[in-house]
Length: 104
Image (cartoon, rainbow, N blue to C red; front, side, top):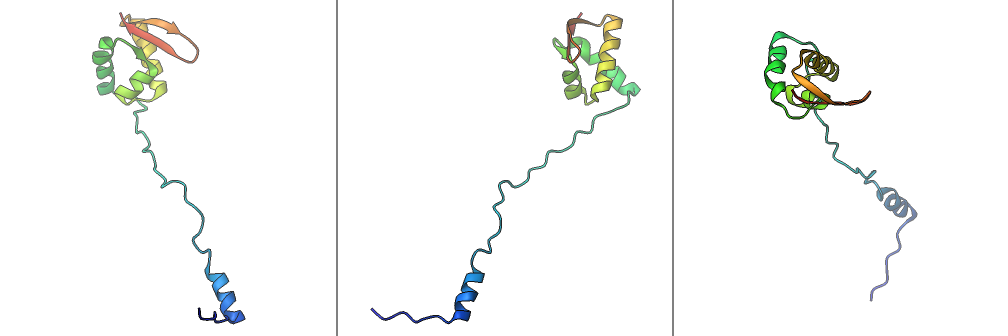
């Protein structure tokens, strides 16, 4: 076996500096969720759709209206109160955080 050739000090220093330049580990690729564009004002088209669709729902809550009708949460709460006053839906559970209704 041939003897190893000794490196110079400068070559050793260059080899030490060259190693470990990969960088930090990236744990994810950074998937970004799209921001929902829900309506925040009630126009006539949305109001008509609420009056037409909601009486057919078996389970009605703020989250159901937000998901299906693409309206904001505060708008959905106001719409539920109005529908309850009109007698279109009946309350099952009324809580400070979550209200659940069903068709009348």
